[in-house]
View 1 (cartoon, helix red, strand yellow):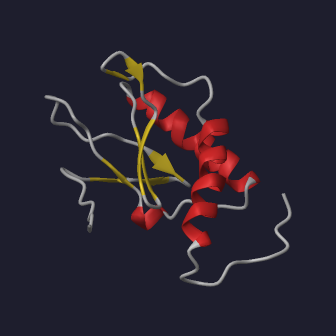
View 2 (cartoon, one colour):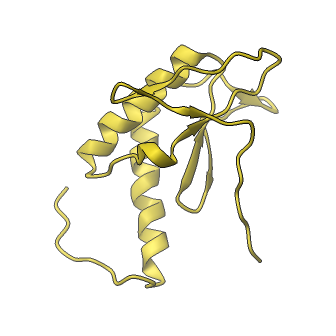
Length: 118
């Protein structure tokens, strides 16, 4: 897809266009993944503004999801910022999750901080 025009920083259309664009990217990238259920519904992601949380039951599935998002993201002209990408295990197991991006292991964290203002 070739982008011929841009929106100005702070324009009210910017987040709307980003959400539409990223929704198409994520939908394409995560097609075929999905065994993580909450309340009987398959959930792939949780989104807040430009932040994205991928959900998976197994480390290998999460790695595959990230690889696919990176691959499809490049087709859409988008890159994942490795410094801002974190991994969190929600489990009784204490060992860290080993997820790789460009031969670098992503940082494991114990919690995510999401700021919401009303």
